[in-house]
Length: 289
Image (cartoon, rainbow, N blue to C red; front, side, top):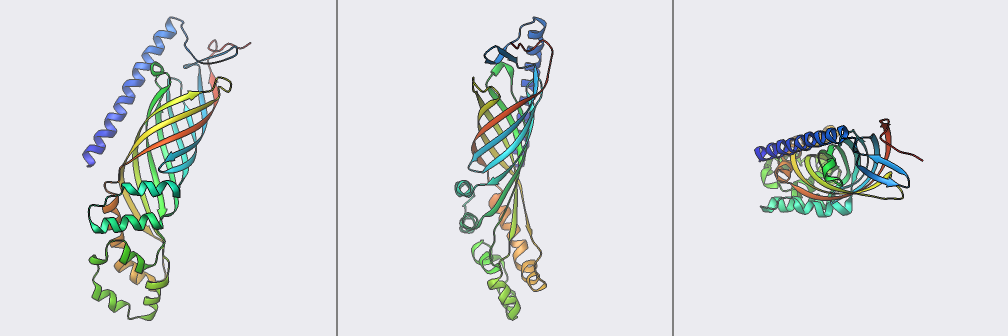
């Protein structure tokens, strides 16, 4: 599995490098011939691919993952780097959790628990895109997403519904529950385990321009995400709570989560509205009235 993921990343970056090299060579030959290809024409304003660098602001919805706000910096030649912060959409993640593995009964139980309990979902995304001049409106990219969400529940709910009850020494658990304080914590106290999937994505997109408002673009992107790893964390509990969490919940929760997310690969469709602001320009590359 890891070999395929690493191979996919290598091929993706190699492809981007080849495209960039081809585009740079083409741009140089065009420049030497003093031929400049317009990409947007609004009235008498003429711009070229090589003429400007841009900073761009994005509003994005990505099904079935998130809604996000982001920023992108586009370099001359077509390469760009971007960052965004998003919120996992509850309506979207109901669909996303359908891609969780259900090969056995415990995984099926866990999938339903995650679908019902997931809250406070956030996404931080870093990416790089390449806009090849010879493809005009098409582009490619790769990105990595750091996701985070919580699964608030009582320890009892986690043991019974997260698919690891059969991994616990029930006699030892019953012995601990003979303590009234421990039992109250086990049955009534809400704890919030944190799940942190890290996903790598490969993307293909198409951009649409608006002739009357050239600084705005609409971008449509198809992506496929590979789950690299999944981490879990428990916020600190009381001393009584740690007896249950440390011994029975945390190690089993972590192993069960990794089991479910190990093959969690997810396709997505994103729509971005982008506003670009030129930051630099070269003399002679634009014509104004």
